[in-house]
Length: 249
Image (cartoon, rainbow, N blue to C red; front, side, top):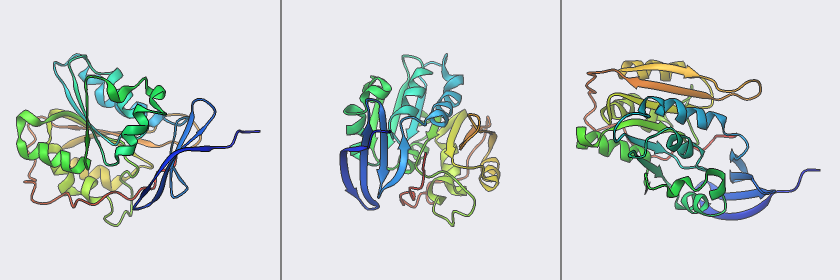
């Protein structure tokens, strides 16, 4: 008989009660309003997302990477495992309690990745961090932007993901990347419309579905084509809205 989940910590949010739950020594669950957001035993797509985003940066001098969404830290850990010692990894996380959990009860899941000296955590919307990098210009661009958020792009989102995955948002992401930089995005399912928007924004697109059998999520690895000059000026694109949290894995 499986052990019951116990609540380790919780906080009220605009979308309901955000809980960290534990069962046994290493089995953790994060839920919001009793809906599962992430599970410590199901993280293959997160790891592959970072591995593919960072594989070309292993021998690059001083690479800069932006990770959108801390979660349980698996995406961050996989990025660090594939980056050199002189890299800088900026993590944009909306909720400070996620940082608290990654430094506390779930730190062992990632060997304390959040406290790696290469990491800088900012409590902010990742869209705002992307916009700032795009506006500041070349010296502030990233070599990779990795978005592993509760909501990825998907058909029929009716504008909820526009501030990250819409036309102007993708132009801003392009401006925030170095030539040849990688824009890596987690998604629940393939989204042909998103792929077309990526191509229109000057990205080459590689779509993968890690794993075998069962529920397989999608990993997009989009690379900014050399010489691409994004048309977005930063006057539009990020609405400042938070994504609708619908991931269940």
